[in-house]
Length: 134
Ligand code: CO
Image 1 (tube, rainbow, N blue to C red):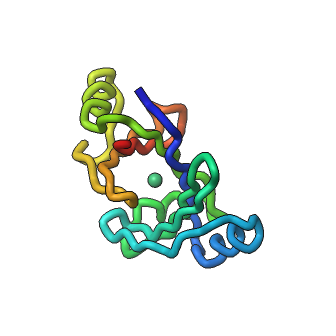
Image 2: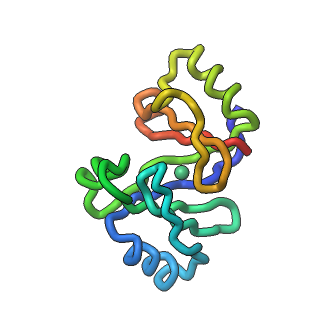
């Protein structure tokens, strides 16, 4: 059911410092910061030849990555994002298998303008999984 790895997301406390690590240190192409108030994060994407890295910084009160960064003050891998052909069909299949979909299960529009859903880490090997409609 899942297709390509769309991105790996890394949560950080300081986006400017993280961009410098990837841009200046690792010589990567980095997009301009994109505030995503609906998701409580500011995002930049690093384009690699075969996938992307998403750097996330908390935005506003109650950001969904605030707790993660309390536990991981240096930052860390926050989620992986897989592409699916149909996010609603994927959700219904996973729910019928007992997997937990975060929130009310209604896809939100993600940073690429496509519908996304998040799956509970306890059901997926301890890793928060994002599904994005391809
Ligand atoms: Co993501």
